[in-house]
Image (cartoon, rainbow, N blue to C red; front, side):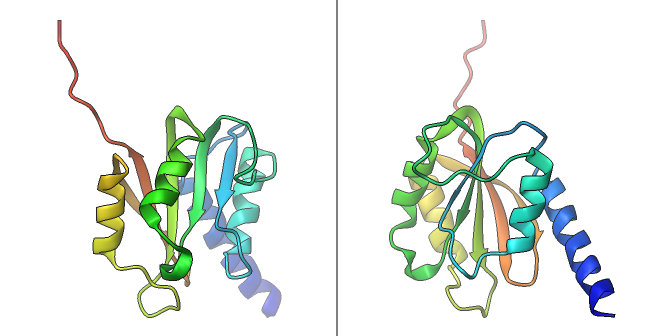
Length: 147
C-alpha cells in the first residue's frame, strides 16, 4: 500500500515538473536548496532535463532557475536580481514558496513587490505539491517598437 501511495505522489510530482515547461537538454539551476525542498519534484525535473540541477555557483547560462524561498531567507528582490543574471534571454525563474500556514510562508504582496522591483512579472502559478506554491517569473515585457 505504501508503494502505491508513493507512486501516486511521484506521479503528481512528475505532473508538476512537466507543467514547468522544461524539456530534455534544458540547463536548470537551483537556489535555496535545503532539507525542506520537495525532493520528488527535484528528481522529476532532473529526469525531464536529463541532468542534475546546477547550484548558484555554476557558470552556465541557464534556461530556468528553481528558487526555493522562505520568509526568513533574506531579501527576495536581491535573490531575484541575482537569479536573473544567471538566465538566458528567454529564461524563467520558478519561485517556490511554502503554502499558506506552513513554516516560512511568504505573503503574496511581498512576492509581488519583489517581482516588480526586480523587473519581472508573474505569468503562471502551478500547484507545487502539499508544501509549496510555484510561480513562474519572467522578464517584464518591454514596449515593442513597430516599424
